[in-house]
Length: 237
Ligand SMILES: O=C[C@H](O)COP(=O)(O)O
Image 1 (cartoon, helix red, strand yellow):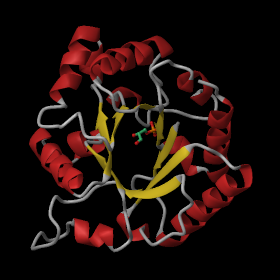
Image 2 (cartoon, rainbow, N blue to C red; image 1 turned 45 degrees about the vertical axis):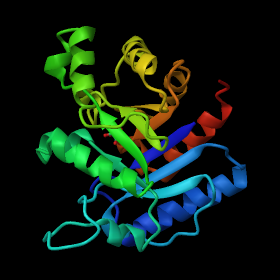
Image 3 (cartoon, rainbow, N blue to C red; image 1 turned 90 degrees about the horizontal axis):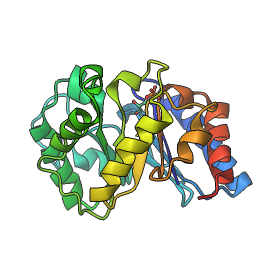
């Protein structure tokens, strides 16, 4: 399964390095078979001695190799650190940073052309959720506009916006219903994200169509993140 941590706007260069090294040691000691991803801030990216199952990724990039885009990070700056996995379409970029579907699709095409692994995030806000599952699915399918769903390095993260950072996890029934409907049309691995923590990760990972989790807040504690990886190791699917 895929167990991913999104640091968001947390951790410094030093504290991120210590965290990543601790997770590397945990994976080596426990021989965990989970595919672990850590999305660190740009300033913390580096060449880490990655174990095979742990990749450090970028939370964002501008879809250029390099150029005159003041304040942005292109792929050249990611390649310096051997970054092979990126997040695209996170709800905080869509809603807080006002990124359009068109920009998400441009980023997607760019990362795909460079054969990067892409964790592509989708999710509905609360006002759509209250309209029921058909409204939710229509909203989610719109977030695939311009996205090549047949890309073999695509991973999809379903993250209901109202469950992100709020402590409100979607019910297992809601998660199962959405992931099953996505699974009907998509071959890519499916992750759930939204207030995942040590206390609920096991039941979420047992959802049939769930191939892993993308964790924010609860993963920012090294011991908790290790515990989530350990729990995933014990879930038989
Ligand atoms: O990228 C991770 C998601 O935004 C989930 O964040 P959260 O676990 O703090 O709800």
